[in-house]
Every structure is written in C-alpha cells, then in structure tokens.
Length: 266
Image (tube, rainbow, N blue to C red; front, side, top):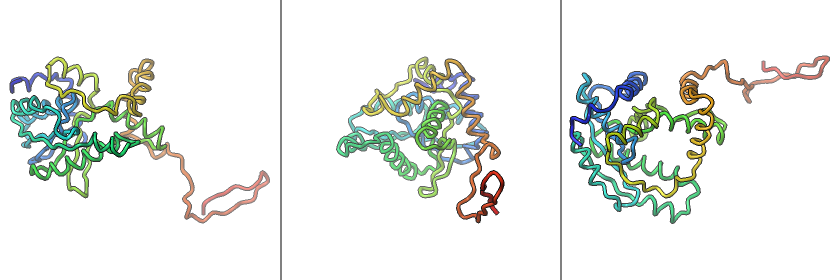
C-alpha cells in the first residue's frame, strides 16, 4: 500500500462523500480530524478517502487515526499502523477489555454498551491528539437500519446525525460516508485488498441490526430505491405529515352535540 493508491477510489465514492461533506458542512478550515479506525471496511475506506481529499482539497485540515482494541491488547494492529503510515496519518491505539467487561456483566445489550464505551474512549483520544473532530465510518445502510430499528422498537423515526456537536466533550462528530452504500464500500475494500483487521466481535452475529439488514434486503428486492427513500424521509420529514395530539397542559372544553361529546382545545 503506497500513497499513490489514494487516488484509486472510484469517482462514485468520492462524489458521494463530497455530497455529504458539502450538504452537512462536515469539514471546516483548520479542522484537526481523528478517524475512529476500527480496521473494518468502512473505517479503512474512510481513511483512504479522507487522505485523498486532504491531498487535493483547497480546505486545509489534518488527520490522525485511533483504534480502540476491544480485546484489551490481544489484536495485532501492525497492519493498520503500516496502512496509516503509508497515507501519512499519525496512528495510535487505545486498548480496553470491552469484550471481557461485557462477558463479566452478562450484558443484555452488548452492542449498546460497547458503542458507548468506545465513543467515550475515542472522545478522550480526540483531545489527547489535539483534535477537534471525530470521523466515523457509518454508511448509508447503517443509517437506514438504525431508522428501522428505532421505528420498530422505540416508536420514533430517527437515525444518528451525519454531523453533530457533543457539548460535554466539545467534540464534533462527522460521518463522511453517510450517503455511500455498504456494498460499494465492501467492493472497494476487496478490490484494493485493504489490510482489514480480522473480525473480533463475538456478539454481533445475530442482533437487531442484523435482523433489520435482512428486512431491508427483502424489501429492496421489490424496490431497489427503498434505502434512498428512507434517507430522503430522514432529511425531509414534513411537519404537516405528523399526527397532532392536544398538549396535556392545554385547557380542554367538552362541547355537546347531537352525536355525543367531542373535545377541542381552547
């Protein structure tokens, strides 16, 4: 892997990332970006894409990368270090025994706990690296699946934000691949033979996300645009489409009528 490979990402991926960066104003001049590099296909393609963007963009920004080793130091991350060095990206590791913690606690929601712990570690790493932005590799499919899970399990149609500011940590989180489909990312990771970290999570083989992915796959067989339609809905929820319920604190008056009584808010 050499720096010349930075330009090897296809225009389709660079265009989707460019659209996301522009639409949500993800990168500002002088930003110091820390990439959460898990070693999976998404974060590796993200690092490659941002390194290429840094080289050709008129907007100056810096890059670093950090891997949270959920095994507490058992993973061999030498290939990730070499990968980052080839792109001119400073790299460091934060080892934490998250897998052991989940096993000891017999955690019922291991994915949620793991994500929260990793996010906390990465927020600390952002500050230690002198950065102000955390870049994560979530893709379009991740957003769609999250929206579906929230709809089914919390009764709310929402997904994580492409960009948001964390007030407690004073860290801005961005997701530059949010408009890029997972299959395109996987295809490029395979084509470029990126040095992906071997799969280590023992808890995510049968999760709500996996089930949501299966449902989306089944629906997409009859409607190939379904994922893009869901993303469009996330960006354009119309207030006029909402059901409007009377607020609890409003004064209500019962009005008699021939057909019975109805309630109206004054």
